[in-house]
Image 1 (cartoon, rainbow, N blue to C red):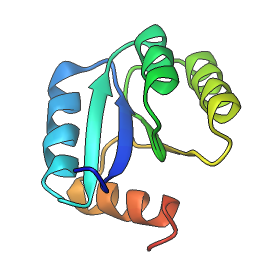
Image 2: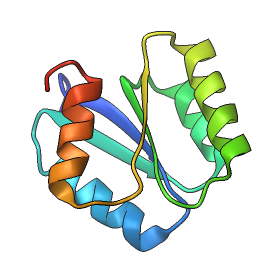
Image 3: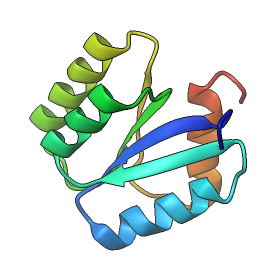
Image 4: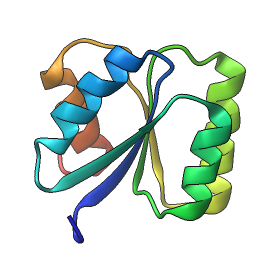
Length: 102
């Protein structure tokens, strides 16, 4: 995990978050952490260096903008993607594309 790409998943639906985390963490090159609120996400972004911020279900457009802005102000190299379903293939493709490995 020490060289794994760190991914922060923000999603308000616990079941969806658990599924996304399980799928991402099945890839040994990735390590995902999940939170359900903007404040928890901002704390995580301040405490840990993430390469990717994945925005999932349940956030308002304003919350998504706030998180994207906060993430970029903390780490201007972080990639931000929105994932609202579509299966594991789409999830993996979105991650690979965001990381420039797609």
